[in-house]
View (cartoon, rainbow, N blue to C red):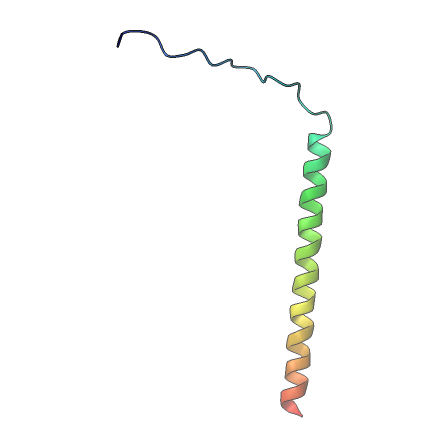
Length: 56
């Protein structure tokens, strides 16, 4: 009972690959980068406002 081989796992995918997966990946990366740039620009603007408020 302990000498039996491990169960068979197929090496290929059971479902066919998605043709648009690279396009989806690029869109996700681009949207994350754009969101990060918007957050960074907002933080820079808030620092600018804070410096202006502190200096009076």
